[in-house]
Image 1: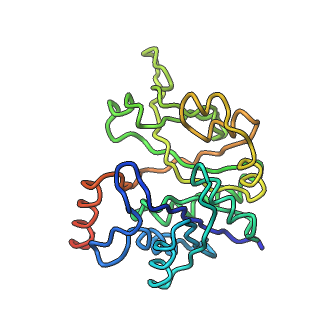
Image 2: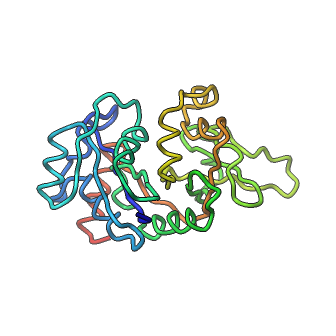
Length: 243
């Protein structure tokens, strides 16, 4: 099958916002908002929530979505997505975090399209301009630099590229949404964490250290993820205002 499957890894626990997938001040759980958003993408053939918590599975199914139970031993969302990919027939597998209810469906479509037009790429992801250049200094903002064909050279929490003051290349903010080739995702999930990955706490560096190719799509703007109670409160307000 040559379709594109979106997998939304969702676990109940969260360091900063426990029970985040099931927050429902809008009348629908947060993870359901994300699922519904992904279904708006034209190039997506299926959307599945992958979880290890029966409460999340039941909530998704109660709202008409598809969810599957996965192992409770996954170290990260990517390996949870890979578990689903093992049984999938789609060629392209997207990893969409469950706390991104305002992701742009057009961005999802753009990643799928790029995966098809760049068959040499194992992964496809995206970057956006910083709305304020001074924000690029934050280690919470992951930067990416690419070569002339759009292949990722490096991702870092440090400020890259360094500017000497002459014709500076502005830093780009990495958007943590990935489209994988199914085979590449399964292969990646079986690799041990790499040195650079452990240093920067960025799993995409494991792919680069092992010779995998990541193509980066330039996108004009990002979306707001839900990390804190304040993020969620603002999201609820936007929903109530119809924005």
